[in-house]
Image (cartoon, rainbow, N blue to C red; front, side, top):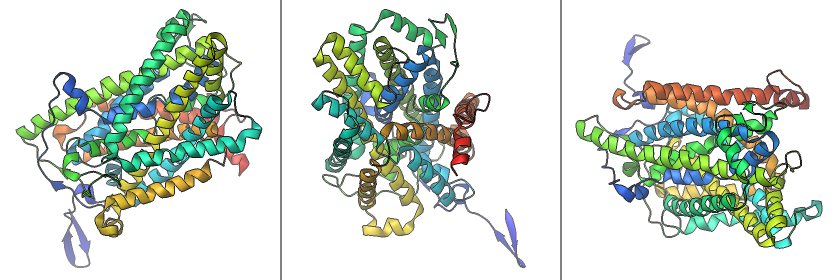
Length: 515
């Protein structure tokens, strides 16, 4: 390519990946994948485990149950489609990281018009979706119930605020004392998955009604047993709730993008070459590259690539997809067995009512167990989201600013823990702003918008910046387009108030009136 500059002709040789302002990739050898025979595969996976632990949070414990109690178990078809599309989406995010060692967000910043524009856009979306410690605030209600024996009232606002702050601050030492933060999250996530899914399965087997098990089975294909008909869209649908439910079936929005930051630090593919962010205490100083490193397409490297791709498939299709489905189905069965439709309180009240209903029927001890389970689920979700947010912002700034990389002698830990400090200070303030459930629903609907944008953008990145030999197949490209249409439909219906625009629930119309 040539351009005219006065009377001179200047050759433009800038690589495609650096035309938005970031530094070009370097070239290295693709590391060999670990052995994955038998149970060895459990030590090779990891990012999907962390994402699954995050997925079993507000969507499965708060927004999902509220939707099922309100509209019925036939809504489980939304979860099947959402989690299936997210599993494909996640593998495409990981495809980029395997090849470059960079988080997917850095790949987005490598597209035109400029890295700074995409950085600012996703930074704003990140803030509106997860920039609030809503999960710690929601956990406060369960902790209050455990110690006081009742739901918090208006007069308990200060105490629940302090409990929420305490829950939020409890995340910090966990992120500081380990030698490798990603590994710490992985261990915590395995513990959560085993105990939470195991506990929910046991509760469902012991106490749930058989008709609800059957209703959930038919609900996976959108069939309503009570109506004896398919019911894909309930009458009088609350699109704000359904949009939030669809986005948080699985992980949701920017939380899916966090997956590639953990994959890089786990050492997936070229992530072993670029380094990781160690902990402040117990972690050795380690260089974190500001630009990715790719490999040449050779028979040896392609054999290694196929080995890494097998790990990705297990990580996403076996762990994330199956676990996320189970994580939504079990609470759906449990809630609809004990809470009468139309009599449930919205938001965090629906979780407390489950504990209360079980306690009334089977004893106070069971109520405490369920309340403790809910508080642990929400706390763990807050921990993963806090870490993922700080890590993602750190990577974004580290890749885009030479001045930041030179700060404190190029130690990424200083940037990571500086951002963590600012995030915690903001979180303490944000917990005072409004009810946690409002923040959760707003963030979940923002997640749908993130899916619309990022699914099309990873499609563009993987089909233009990656070599033809490792680009996604045609059916995968179609799945990414379908994902944008699926979530775009929910975003549109939320904005205009339904299939026929209704100014009462329409978010866009209400927003225009407010201004």
